[in-house]
Amino acid sequence: MDFLQKLLNIVLLPLTLIAILFLLPPFLFLKYLFSLKRYICSENVANKVVIITGASSGIGEHIAYEYARRGAILALVARRENRLRIVANKSRELGSPEVIVIRADVSKDEECKHFIDETMNHFGRFYSTVDHLVNNAGVVRVDLFEDSSDIASIMDINFWGSVYSTHYAVPHLRKSKGKIVVISSVAAWLCTPRLSFYNASKAAQICFFESLRAEFGPDIGITIVTPGAIESEMTQGQFFPKIETPWMPVESTERCAKAIVDSTCKGDMYLTKPSWVRVGFWMRVLCPEVFEWCLHSILVNRPRTRQN
Image 1 (cartoon, rainbow, N blue to C red):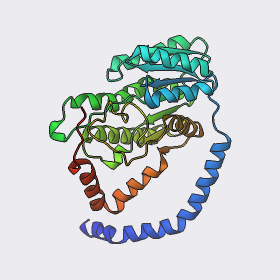
Image 2 (image 1 turned 30 degrees about the vertical axis):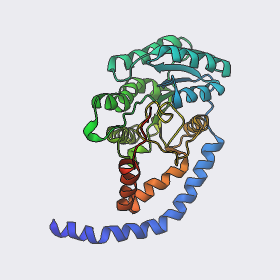
Image 3 (image 1 turned 180 degrees about the horizontal axis):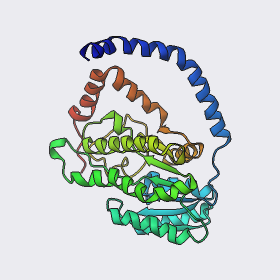
Image 4 (image 1 turned 135 degrees about the vertical axis):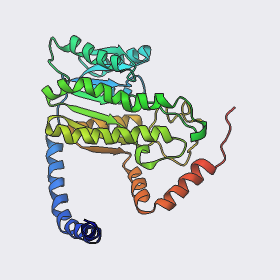
C-alpha cells in the first residue's frame, strides 16, 4: 500500500498535466458551443414565480427590479417590511404582474418554512410551483478576530438562512425544474482580513451548494454568484467604516443584478462580477505568500482614518 501511494505521488500529477494538455482545447471548444446554445435559448421568466430573500436593499433589491422588467411574479422576503413595500411598488411599475411582500428572518428555520408556504398559498391557485429561489440575504461584521462579537448571527443568516430556504423550496423547484441563485462573495476565496467569519460563512455556502448541484444533477440548476465590491449598504459606509478602499472601483448594483439574472436564465454554473476580481483567485493560488503579505499590509497594517 505504501508503494502504491508513493507511485501515485510520482506519476499522477505529470499524467494529469499531459491529459489536460491534450483534452483542454476540445473541452474549451465544446464549452464555447454550449455557452452559445445557452445564450440563444436563454430562459424566459415572464409569469414565473421568483422568491428573493434580502430583497429590501442592495443586490437583492435590484435583482427584484431586473426580474420585474422581464415580467416575473415576485415574492420579496426581508426583515424590513417598510423597505420591502417600496421595492414591491417599484417592481410593479417596472412590469411585474404581481408582487407579494413577506416579512421573515432567514436565520430562523420556521420563518423560512413560512415564507415558502406563504408564497405557495398565494400563487398556488394559478401557478403550481416555484421557479427560481434567490438566496441573497446576508450580513457582514468587520473586525479583527480578537475583537469579534455576535459571531453566530453571521453564520445563521449567511449560511443557515440559505440552507433553510433551499430545504423548503426544493420540492417545488423539482416540479418546475427550477433554479437556485446563490449570492455568495469573492471573500470566500480571497480570505480578506477583518472578515474572517464572513469569509467562512460564504465559503461554507459555496461548498454546500456545489455539493447540492452534484446531488440534484439536471433536476435543479444552481448558479453561484461571487460579487466583488458592489454598490450597497455594505460598501457605502454603513457596514464598512473601518476599511476604507478608495483604490478599489465599485461595480454598479444595476449592472451586477442584470448580469446575475442573465447568467441564471442561461443556466451558468458560476458568475463573478466584476470579472476582473478573478485575478485575485489566481494570485492566491500561484503566489500565496505575496498575496497574503499584500492583504496584511493593506488591510491590517495600514493606518485607519477615524470618522467623526
